[in-house]
Length: 190
Image (tube, rainbow, N blue to C red; front, side, top):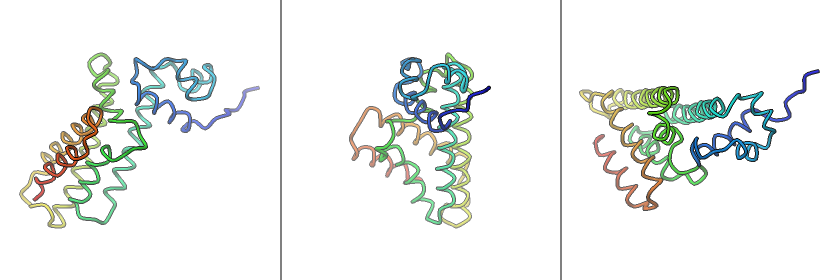
């Protein structure tokens, strides 16, 4: 007779996601995952597979949560410049999550060594750029952004700024510096 799972999959996956996000893939041991997730090692293997498979699922969970936040941002009825500011400040102001970005961290740590992670991170970046472009097109249609501006190029620009901020928050606590970078980045919309 098969046993039913005594845990909620997304709840324990979130715990793994936060551990990988905080420590990275290499520094996270299976024992730490067992302790953090609060389930047996066998349950981890039966539900998620090996450590690498669990890591990929944690990245997928991170990507889907991020996509939800970006979609909510796009749906807000606010000036695009204000929405772009919110987008850029998500990592700077957020005290409830580990510093930096799990996607950036994973790309830096494993991108060259692990083609699956590299492809996943690249696809995640592309998806974020698509959300940004959609937001910028809304601004263009509303007359907030000049009609002759290349929104695809501008999406690349904001993605680059966002990635830089996501890396920088790991090395500085200087809010004034980070806010100055955001203010300078947003001037391109003037």
